[in-house]
Image (cartoon, rainbow, N blue to C red; front, side):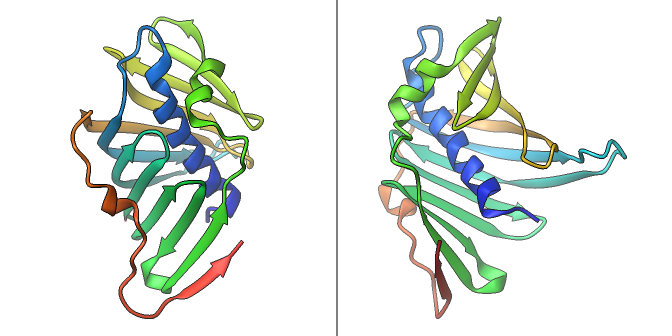
Length: 181
C-alpha cells in the first residue's frame, strides 16, 4: 500500500515532466497526455511486481491529473501547490500542501544528462532516472523509501495539445470524507 510520501513522489514526477521544457535537447512541453504503466518491483528480490495502469494529463507549469485505473481506481490532482488523492471506493480525499520549494520550472536545471537519452534528477533527496526518445519523456525510474524499484512507462503520448483546465479541479460527486494532511 502506498503511503502519502509515495504519492508525493508521484506528484514530484510531474514536476519533472513540467520542467523538461528547459533542456536544450528536449521538446518544449506545455502539455503532456499519456497512458502509463507503473511497475513496482519488490525490494526483497523475490520477484513480486505490482502493476498499476492509468492515464496522465499535465499542463505546465502546475497542473496534473493522474488517473489510476487498475488495480483500483484512484485520482491524484495537483494544482497550484495542492495535491488531492481521491480514492472513490473509500469515498475519501486527502488534501496536502506541496512544499513551497518545488519550483517546477527550475527542476530540470537539476537534471543532468548521464548518457544519450538518459537524465538524472535529484529532487528533495530522491533520485530519478529519466529516459527519453526524440526529446520526449518515455520512462521514469526510481527506488522508493522501502527499496522497491519503480518504473513508469508512458505510451500514447500527446505533447502540447489543448487540455481543458477544468479537469484539474477536484469536483467529487456525492458525500466523501475529506482529510487534511
